[in-house]
Length: 254
Image 1 (spheres, rainbow, N blue to C red):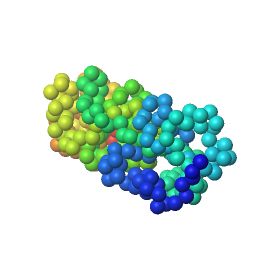
Image 2 (tube, rainbow, N blue to C red; image 1 turned 45 degrees about the vertical axis):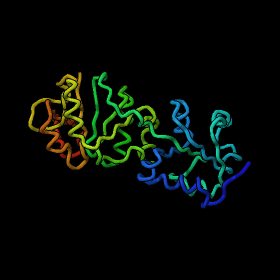
Image 3 (cartoon, one colour; image 1 turned 90 degrees about the vertical axis):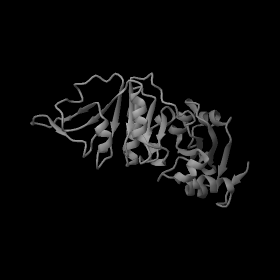
Image 4 (tube, rainbow, N blue to C red; image 1 turned 120 degrees about the horizontal axis):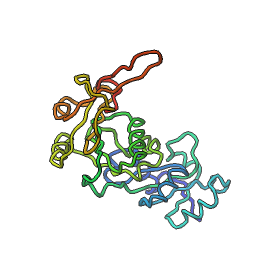
């Protein structure tokens, strides 16, 4: 069994470059790391290009034997502990990572779903990962992201999705406003948050709606707010206080 020990190996250099968005876009690949994420990738039949294993970790049985048998049908590459740490993004690596093809070949919007979620320049990778995980948990299988939104295949985003990245179709929009205008032609209505309404998020019907989640600091941009068919307040319940509402300008979710 050959074990890669050099940083100058072409595959190692390629995997290292995948930490950068430009390389991920050029190759249409991204990195996943850890046993749980790789199990999810196998289960969801993701297009796994290579699996990288730490030779030392494999010898110490830190990766379950039954999982080793499960991934044996893939292209498994062994590297030294030093090389694996060089590639790893986590403090306590489990000794396994993989290069996976992005699930973005089909860029068509599915208009058969009642709810479409769109992200308007969400910046924080942790927030983006949480949104993808939440969307997945309620059965939505697609999400629209603006050009200014954080990269969905950033390693921090991928980890925080906890596997949702393999089930959600991510549609990157060059011009979100233009895309929303097209969606409205399919009888969808746009919902954003605003203080200029008495409606709560609990007061409206969510059939055929596009829910816009805005930037953490500035909320949904004004041009998109002006396109909205419905605006809602987000009630905040606090102990010993009456319900309050927050605007789209800070920590908004819609």
